[in-house]
Length: 76
Image (cartoon, rainbow, N blue to C red; front, side):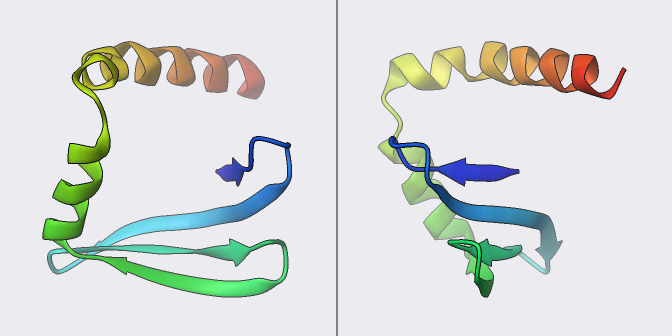
């Protein structure tokens, strides 16, 4: 998964997201050069989720479905 700025510049290329104990561990490359390992604690996950307005939270299942369908079309 790649994360881009609004200008289309690649900010992070995420290689893996794994669960280590109760933390999410995100591994990837920042800005195409620096290897990064990011540890996200449960309280940080909750804080991130709280940043989403209710309208976005309600649309998330549909967005995930749409993303899943698009990824299936790419792999076919």
